[in-house]
Length: 289
Image (cartoon, rainbow, N blue to C red; front, side, top):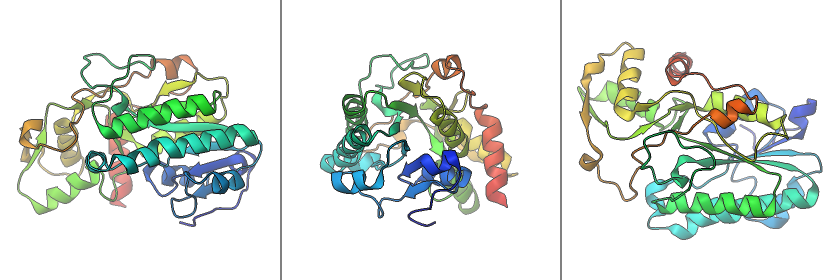
């Protein structure tokens, strides 16, 4: 992938993707191949001069750049806040100065993860990790510096490649007789391609609410997702064994409940993302080619 892709069609020409080397960024580039796409090495979003020189009036900026090392953030909060708070603040301020729109990608980790019903965009936040606090700080910086921006929270994103959960399950199916996966973390697995399509639709809807949630519909535990992966590739799902989060202690505690409500997205007239099961089926088929 090129660090910068020349502009082309009308919407794509006005589309700028930061963090284009990540899961959602790469899917956006696939859907809008003539957008101006910047990987981390091509554009440091914490650099005000570099950011402002990359933007033009009328641009629609989709910020996918983020520090996503959830566990490492616990011991390196400075890096987490630089990537997830300082960078978005710089980007938002630059968008306001040049007259560009901003769509900023955020996370379920801004919530405490203790709910039992899907989180709505206006529900109280309360992150339990450094990563979550840095992402919440980024949301606040975006709202302060670019009041017209859209913040889109998502969760459990995968492409089925590299080292995401789905790809890891495929690898472990080849390497192990059985795999232990937690049953006490509940969320909505979100196919990066579906999320990217939703973001492109939102790019054409400046009147939409300022804060939205976008995930594939439905809910599952990681255990259920792993079983679905095994079944989807023709392996025996009973090789996936249940365990709890206590069996896999991590520096950053994972939210027990990460389901985000898509009601506001639907009410805004945006196309709801399909059920996670059908999205996973397509992802597995794509990666099998």
